[in-house]
Image 1 (cartoon, one colour):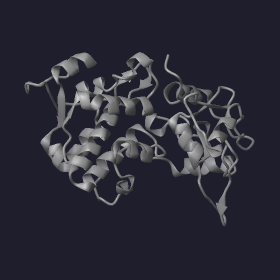
Image 2: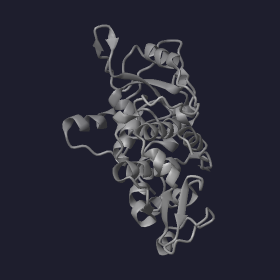
Image 3: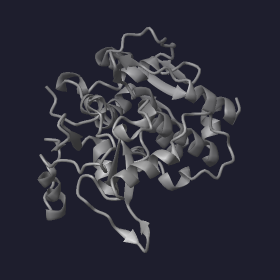
Image 4: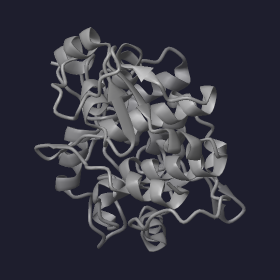
Length: 302
């Protein structure tokens, strides 16, 4: 296997869907395994070792679920990750196929242990290939604002993701520079949540064009799917700390906690109306607000 073939296989991960809900379980398991390779040189992991950290990643960066199932969300990707990448065996060394029930108790009783195939591990030992593979998964399944947060959570160095490898990452939807410029312009280069409009000379700083429905999840590059947000509030929107109501007001997740005055200032955003775009430009479409509310906004598990 060559690096380009590995990237191609990662780009063709089957995207699980539960109804219309995104299911980023496999990419998060892979990123966690990449972190193990980077730190130990091996991806070997028993289900007992993987359940808590991988379920935690899925709970943090995936759509919310009932509390009763939150602790075992790692079972699905642990069983169903493509076998061209992943070897899964029981405690006796017997192979476990993708038809094994994704039940935590069964996986624990079997002593289920997985490992990326040796050629995959060997390729990931190369920092350039590891960086390219990580970038591909982040670009296809998450947002640019979440990249450093996810990398930190799995133990990967986000600085290594700078594209200096020369590897051809498999084609993906390109983000539109025109989208960024138009969104910033219609919101007067200021944060629609807090009004921040800092500049260095004539150049705006730390104000970004955010997709409400993520670009990686087929969100269109249109003003009706965009907001100008400062770096902080962009990240909080992508993490689901901030959400939007159908009448385009901000809401703050009940799971958000802060003690310091700067952190507690986020609470004050609850109920605040978004700044309006310039006259004649569309407001954020309710369809995209609904998507974000169902798939990103953090709420207490039922």
